[in-house]
Amino acid sequence: MFEVDSRSGSYLYEPRSHRVIPLGPGDHLAGEPPATEVELTRAYLHWCERTNRPGDCLRLLVENPTITGDGRYALAMAMA
Image (cartoon, rainbow, N blue to C red; front, side, top):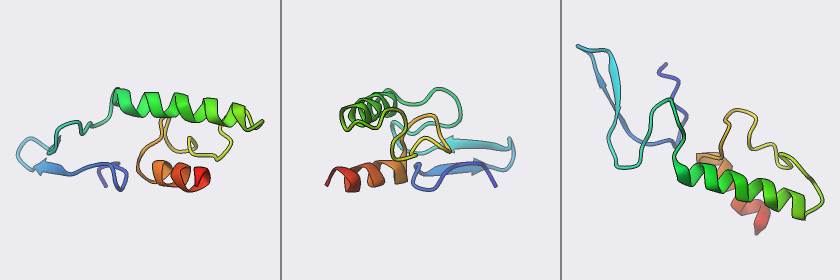
C-alpha cells in the first residue's frame, strides 16, 4: 500500500498529513539509498566478478537498485 518493502524498517503513518515517517535511526523512505546499502551492493557486484559470474549473479538487484533486507539474507546464504 505504501510501497515500502518488507524488512525495510518501521514507519509511522500520519493520517492528517498523509506522510510516512521512518521511526528508527538510519531508516529511509524513497530517495537516496543509505551509504551502507550502496557499499554492500558494490561489494556484492565485486564478489560476483571474483566468482566468474559478472553482474548481478544472484539476481538480488531485480526489484531494488541496492541490496536490502531479503537480499542481504540471500547473499549471506550464498557465501555460506
